[in-house]
Length: 106
Image: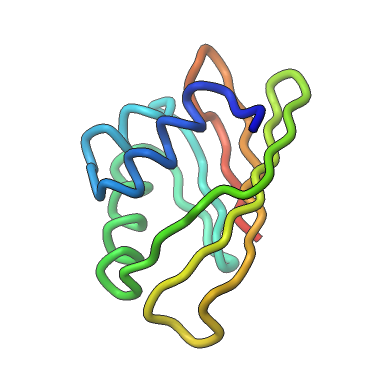
C-alpha cells in the first residue's frame, strides 16, 4: 500500500494502543474530525482516541491506500465492540513536514 511513513506509524501505534507513538504522528495544531466532532491539538486528539479505544476496543486494518502529494486516503476495516461491526471506513489524511496535519474519518 502507498502510505506516507507517518500514516503507517499512525496505524501501527493505534494497533499497539501506544498513546506516545500515536501522539508523535501529529503536528501540535493538528485537527481530527470523526463522527461529526472536531478535535484540535495533540491533547484533545489523544483524549478522543483514548475514549474511543476504551469504549469500543476497536482495531483498524488498512486494506487500500492511495496517495497524492500531501494527501493520503486509506480504507480500513474497523472491528470492535460497537453496533454494525465490522465496518469499512475512509481515513483522509493531510500531512505536512512528515506529520499528520489533518485527519477526517468517514
